[in-house]
Length: 166
Image (tube, rainbow, N blue to C red):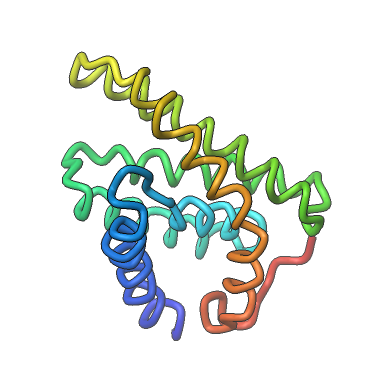
């Protein structure tokens, strides 16, 4: 029960912190996506129902705060969660280099999704923005992801003390 009460508020604070505080620190040139790391953590550590609910809520909050009305992030985060969940059944996901490389791969997948969806729906080509801004952002997020994984693991109510066995 704690999961369904506390987690939406935690996710809202996470998204606001990500956009307001980290956006100010990096002068809104690079957006550090802690929310992507949260989705990857959910895919590696949580049960499928709770993780998919968390990913969907987080994606909807990202859509609302970033102003993307089309539901891009809800679709992207839910699909990334399901992909990570399926991959996590076959890998040992506790080593730091694996977490960094896996976050990097999932970030590239997110970037490709954003590129394709923007091209299909809006008819805009954002490839130059992807290369100029997204690659440095992705490197930063990948390097801090092991620390964020430890932080998310310490928050026991995030998964009600249940962590899926690996």
